[in-house]
Image (tube, rainbow, N blue to C red; front, side, top):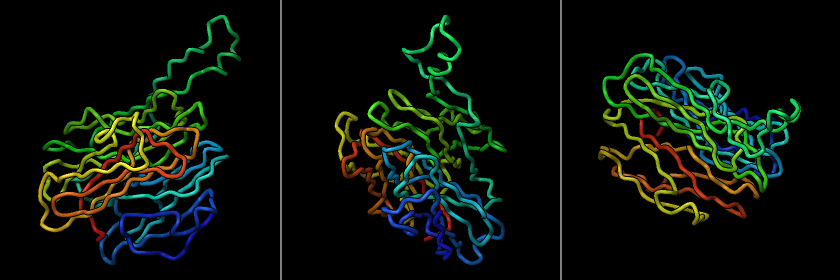
Length: 312
C-alpha cells in the first residue's frame, strides 16, 4: 500500500501517479484531499468514477475507487486492486455537493445488491449431468439491475449521471473487456440502474455512482458521449474526439466533470482507456476517448456534468 500523507486542494480529479510511478503498482494508492476553507459546514456528498484505467492483462481486471473519511474539511481518495490483478495506474473524477441540498441526490449501485440475468451458454449442463459438472459450467451473470426511488419526488424532469467506480472482469483472448453503466426508466419518482456486459465479456462484479438532478436547473448541464457518435465499433482508433455544445450559454467558463460509463476493448492486451475534456468555453467543450500502446479500443463512452460545485 502506498499513501501520500500530504493533502492537496480539491480540484475534482486524482491520479495514482500523484503518489507513485506507473512502474510501481500497488494494491492501494491514496492521499487526502482538502476542501476550500469554510466551504462546508458538514461533510458533503461525494460521487466518484474512473476517468482512466491502465490494468495488466496478465491477471483479472480489477479496480475499486474509494472516497472515505469524509469530514467538512477533507477526505481520503484511494484506488485499490486485489488478488492477482496488477493496476499500473488510474485517474478519477468526483462531484460533490452539500449534504443538505435537496435538488441534487447522490447514490451508489453495486452488483452485489442487484438482481441479475445469467448469460446464455452453449455449454450449459444437461439435467442428466452430475451436480459437480453443473457447478463448473454455471454461467456468469451478464446483466445487473436495481430500481431506485428518490427520497422525495422531483417536480420536473430529471437527469441521472452514471460513472463506473468498481470493476472485476476476466481477461485474455477469450474475454474482451466489456462493461456499461447506465440509467433508464427515469422519471420524477426514480429510475432503474444497470451494469451490463455482453458478447464475450465476463463481468464478475462492478459498481457505479449516480447523481440525479433537475434537467432545467440554471447553471446545470449534463450528457453522455461515445466513440459511437463519431465512428463504428469495427473501426477502432487510438484516439477519438468530438465537440459538445451546452444546452445553455454559461455566464462564465464552467467546470466540466467527466468519467467513464462504458468500455469495449480487446482482452488480448492490457486495459488502457482514458477520457478527457479540453477547450472548455461558455458554449461547450471538446472530449477525447483514447487508448495507447498495443491495446485495441473498440468503443468507449462517458457521462459528463456541470453542476456547480465548489472547486475552480
